[in-house]
Length: 315
Length: 306
Image (cartoon, rainbow over all chains, first blue to last red; front, side):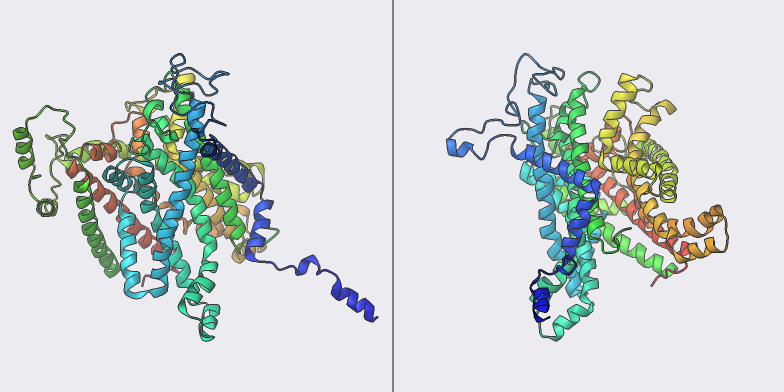
């Protein structure tokens, strides 16, 4: 009898009793959703292509310039023969009017589009989160001032603001990043403020205060982790929007400077004007933009469904 | 209610004022000037004469006050790029085309989006639902300029059914409206579906079914009414976006509307036009939000304005 009891104690805890956190539950729900897996796959492929476009990680060790890996040629390597060539075995997506391989430019373009989209969202998070937290936590005058700034910013047409900023800062990679984050932090700020406003009044925060926690501990230890889920979703869904915005700015000629390729720039500079004959110059970058936005949107949708506690299992 | 609207309008005036100052400062701070690109060969004296004529020789704050003085009399100044037209006249000439396109787009977007969402919600997890979901994902993730390109390539260049661009008659409307409407259709269908699904789960809907009401009556009286009211806040902001036009759609389909001025005015440093457009946009946005909020109170008796 006694040994049997001991046996029960020593046996590994049954699976049901395993510690279940929100994030572990969410991960399980996320991976059960077929669409989010497809999205994750698309994002993974794109990241792989962007990272391994050339061997930039090996080049410094070997003491030479990076050689193309997934790309076939350098993005500014021009050939005289195939100017404007249609897709073929040598040039998978054809060549542009400067005789550059379209496939290689698409591959290098993935690097630009993805990195700008992801980093601009992270930068926007770095601005929006503290501002929103400050507004939501402090309330009063701080809240008033921050929210008026947000009001004014959201009354500005985003494209025009980004456009003026780009003209002011000058077209370059870092300035596109900056302009995009300066126009997108507003939403994150609003969201964070809302979260802080609700969570501030919750019992567990009161309990934490009652046992003598200091403000930083309450903010970083109690409120922030609970406010994070909608922010993750917002940032993920912000990525496709940033890809669109970067494409739009480059399309209009104030984004990434040539010869560095970006998909929007490829459409805007050569694609639209020559669409009636050289259809491949507009079609492939357009498809890539759509494909990338699809991937991130599916992942964002999946995350939202997975992290939403209202989604009861089995429904 | 009147008091609430008045407060909101005063708040709007404040936002507009700050916004105009920021825009004014930002656009003058951008390097280059209206005649800096040298499209015309001008001597320095001629350039100076032009600057004096348009008041650009004065400090920015003085220029701002002069502009503000004009705005009070609803005079937004003359466009630099089109010296024989005032900003108001230019907007008055090009906006109707953009409005036409935008309103058609709105009509198509709501006309397709709402029924699609309702049907998807009623026939949950059937092929219609999946088709609607798929359609709305693709509509959502594909920028309208991509749709524009794809539509021109297929319907205009390959099939030769419709013209590639221009704005001369109904056959010219179809492609831009479709390309422009795709994303809003997707968004409207998505939200409508979610909202109707939630309304279908409500207890009073079960009660209505239990007391033997027909499906049609349940849907129209108990589900749709409750489902569509919250949608007002989602759909409202779509409207100013669509009726101010898209530079991309208008550039791709060569439509002579207002959309292109959003960008050309900044390229040309056409200061009066830039700030005129910003003000137009801000007023439209603010008015739409105000109308949305007020409408909400009328539609949903549970909401009270504080």
